[in-house]
Length: 305
Ligand code: ATP
Ligand code: MG
Image (cartoon, rainbow, N blue to C red; front, side, top):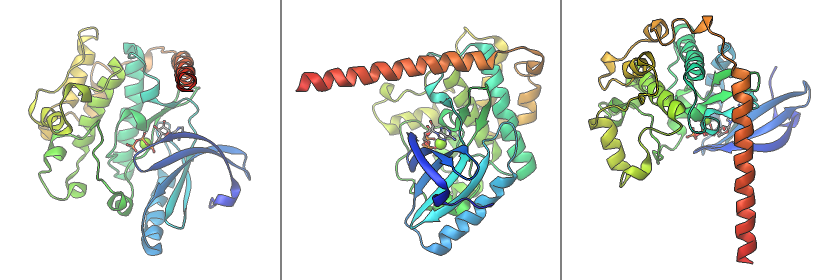
């Protein structure tokens, strides 16, 4: 069945990215809560139609580690994309000061399984692996979203600002080829996976913008500096696993099969990890932080008056 705007009741805003806004919506005919992403594009109807058609492949991306796709439509020059609503939000807002190793291993297992599924079953390379694209629900599920399935959509997004957090692999930053879309290989995703894992582990992006005088210096550090590592508070297995992702030469990075067979993850399915409990605590912490921020803002506003 095809989804359209008339069936949706708009609720609160879940977040904003570089290209648009994500809102929680209710799909009235089925009573299913969904997340709707609005992407503004200045395109003609033919190109918008091409994007909607390309997105159709997402109906086949059904896997426990992948956010479910419900459908897409366009109105004027906006593409609307409806997906499973993940009620604990994205990992960047939940990891706090970092996550304990057993939770980290479980999160990473889900991520690798999702990436491996996309690649093996659908020949899709994610292209945007980072903590904001790893979503969590209160049942403790971890799922990937925002992978690149539409070449047309990718081309249409104005990639003007790189942002202050780049998860791009060194070879992509160097831009060894003019056409990044065609040279992007699965190992570039493995680099991003390694950086994301580090960030989730320690609660901080590994190349913090405030330590560089500008974006150029930061990107230079990624391309020419030594890759970052997990601190010694993590096991040797965990550290080695991250090292196997963060190899500067793309050919030297581990494959997904190797990453799953690595001692860090090999026996994860035998372990009991209370993901539901971890999500509940992380979510409560996040709600508290938000409340404090709001109170501070209110106080500042009052002082100004
Ligand atoms: P970028 O634009 O650089 O990709 P981003 O991933 O944060 O950054 P969006 O993909 O537009 O940007 O998402 C904005 C925010 O909305 C996310 O950070 C996430 O917290 C929230 N979000 C996105 N999809 C969902 C979803 N399906 N369920 C719940 N929250 C979501
Ligand atoms: Mg996103």
